[in-house]
Length: 246
Image (cartoon, rainbow, N blue to C red):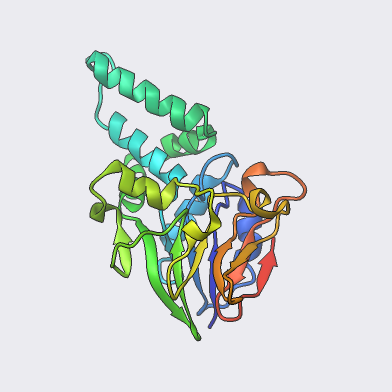
């Protein structure tokens, strides 16, 4: 049994499928969000993860957050009877998610699902955790999150634990300018969200060490969202900190 972490697949089923084909039946995979949008098969990847809960443990990313907000704003709304403010909010969320963040392929596939399957997807996204703060593998303890960590003292941080918008932004949207702002004492933070090229000019995992040479932060978003020849899906093995690219 091995434990892997992946992030930011962004609808690219071929890369995700190639990774899945390498797994053993008892391997565990933490998915740090953003499996949807940009690429064409986000809903397919999301449903695969939903169908394999014994192997896949997923966190919400900012793209799933946008999808959830849009679904909840439009659910049960008759646009012919909706208020001006409802329509304005729906248009804002549509522009934010579908237009500016390339959610169109996800929305189109979601709308093709039956009502019952749509509801299952909605409930799945709604109940995704935002962080696993205490994942022990070998001698290391890992803090897994989509973007940045926080000091909330819970092993699994849920969306329902976060009452203010600024709190959820910290976990799934924030991009600190100081690398040390990613650090958590005694743990290795692993996240996606920010393409590694921005840290070191390469589409390979980025590792930050403290002054003692201890690993404190690993960014594994190697650019699937870009969908270019150099883009990679990184699979980080927490057992030995090895990485495979797909």
